[in-house]
Image 1: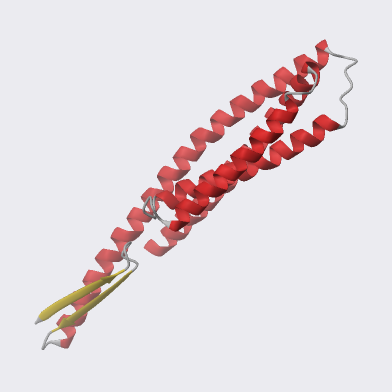
Image 2 (image 1 turned 90 degrees about the vertical axis):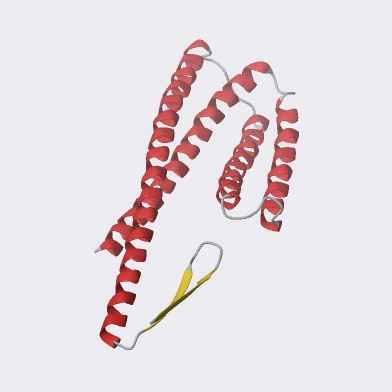
Length: 193
């Protein structure tokens, strides 16, 4: 008998196994046993990875919920102290722009973190992602510079609004990621059966 194998891809996505034996039935049993072992090991690893990601996300979701509750309380206190405050038109536009940049930056940083585990540090994909992150950080600095020229009470109000909106957006993204990993874990369980 003879056993040969070849692994395709850096992450072992495809494995070729050739087993020759004069007893066809025994050869089939050996190959099926190897495939069964590899499949259950692979499924277990995928489930474990999904479970640890869900645990991490649950912790971050708890943290963000607490931060969001504190932000909402600060906003309530501000509104009680400044009953007659009227915000001008420029501040909301600047803060909308800042929120958009922050949202894009958060998504880009998540994508970078995910890509970092797959690609080498000098990979063109990582370099491009880092360049996009740098561009977003530069745009953010420009908007923050304009915001710093606003009256202090407008900055305070807008900062509280923004803090709440950013935390709500981060919470939404984390919940979406958790759902994705939950679906992965569930599909992995169905692969076990």
